[in-house]
Length: 423
Image (cartoon, rainbow, N blue to C red; front, side, top):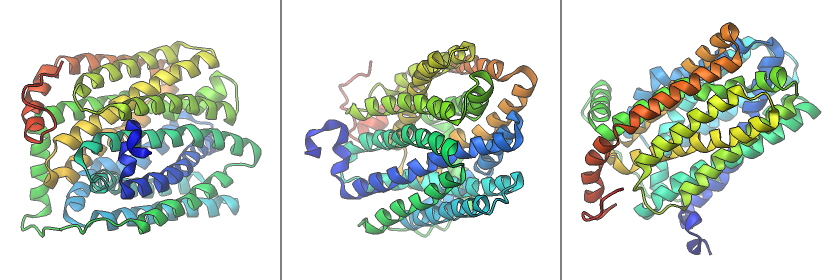
């Protein structure tokens, strides 16, 4: 049955099917916690700056540790590393849950535990991205697996905020954190059930710093990877932080409660899910470079429109398109990187991807929180949207250069035939 559905074709791989189901449950818990955390912080502090600060400290470890994380991922067993990161993330959720149930939670607890989770996630992202390819038996299913993974994230993004909004209003934030802590049982159980091929770990004579330099030179000198990561970095800095300001919109702009916050995030998740499902239905990587430019343009234009809207229903409609643009850019970028990169550098390249995405967001969060106190949240998002549009236009001018550099790699890997010319 799965084989007949093109959009689900990667699920015929047993290991990926297990990962997909376990991670899907865990991610719903993660999004419940994310929404509850934002609402908890704003409720405790009533400060947009503090929302930005929390976002900053939870992501800042990525900037400093991501390149080293990539070296570690390339050197050690990826399956064991992923198991470890999930256990550590579960411990973080348990600690917050206990503090909330004891009614002793303070903002410094959230800051410290945010840094801890940021360190864990810095290693989790590249090992997760590098391990997915090991779960796929046929390379032609990789594009679908990456897109389905994004769809899974956004199904969770759709379900999690809705549940969180209802729970926070009905019983308080602490039960949201409890649910997240319990959700890790699913991913740990499915990881334990996997039967992955034995991973050959080559003990390298080169030092960690040497490998780090090699990874950076590879990323910078290879035109497609360089431009894709540069665009992602700027979009993450200027565009992504709009999410951290959503509690302010829900509470102060639309005069709502946690349920409105959940509905706003669910609208964004609906769009992101739609973008991921569309990409999962594609059977080729051809044309993804152009779609990155289109997606970034849609994302930037959506932010501009959202900043100008004063109606919650119009804003929810616009958030759908913001989600589509953001997810199509992220997933298309991920797919191109995964298909172009050499296997022995995959961990390092994906760590730079994490650095471009997750690593720039904390600076954006801090900047957004500070700007919001100076010029207001709506003007902050307007500035970010304009910045994304400018970067998308610059990236579009580099598309011929990107295609020229990527084409020989795709031909060598039998991803395209030599006679095919990308439009």
